[in-house]
Picture 1 (cartoon, helix red, strand yellow):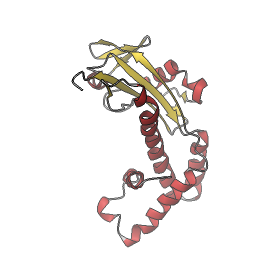
Picture 2 (picture 1 turned 90 degrees about the horizontal axis):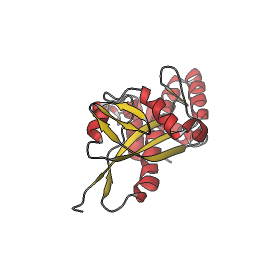
Picture 3 (picture 1 turned 180 degrees about the vertical axis):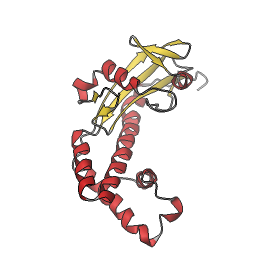
Picture 4 (picture 1 turned 30 degrees about the horizontal axis):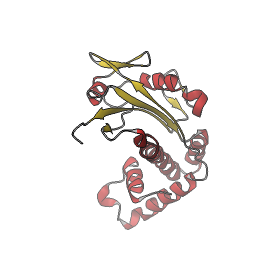
Amino acid sequence: MFTQKMLTDALRYMRVPVDARDNDELRGTLQTVQDAFESLEKFVTPRCVWGKFDIAHFDGGFKIAGSDFYSRDLSRLTARSNQCFLIAATLGSEVDRQIILAQKCDMLYGLALDACASVKIDSFCDAFVKTNIAPVLNKHEFLTSRFSPGYGDAPLKLNEDIIVILNAHKNIGLSITNSYMMTPVKSITAVIGIFERLDI
C-alpha cells in the first residue's frame, strides 16, 4: 500500500522534476514507481525496536545510557527534553537483495525500487511513532521531530551507539559496518526528544 505522498517522495528521490511529472513521456516512469511499490509489499519485513531514556546534557551534546552523543543539532533539538526515545527500524535484508537484483536487470526499475524502499522505511517509522510511541505520552508531553545520524552535524557513528543501546542486532537483525553504515541498508535509527507544555 502506498499513498500519493509516498509516490511523490519516491519521484523526488529519483530526481524527477516536479514540472515534468505530468509529461506523457514520463508516464512510464510513474508506472514503474507504482509497480515498485506494489512489488515491495511482497518482501518487506518491517521491524522496529525502541526505548525511553533519560538525557544528561553537556556542552555540544548529551549522554544517553552511558553513551556520549556529540551533536549540536541534536542538542538543540532536545534542548527542552530531559528524556527521549531512541528507535531503530529496518525493512529486512530481502529488500536489499531485491534492489541489487533489480538493478542488474532493469536500471530504471532498480532505481525506482531503491527510492520506494527509502520512502517505505521512512513512512513505517512515522506510523510506528504515531501508533506505538505517541500513545504512551501523558497529556502534557509532546515529541520533537525524528532526527537521524548522518543529518546536520550528527555523525554516522551514532548509528552504532543507538544499535548497541537498543540491542538492535539481536532484536531486529540490524548491524553496523566499520564505516558506520547499517545493514540491512534500508534501515533507520533516530532520536526523538520529549518535552512538556504545562499550559495545555
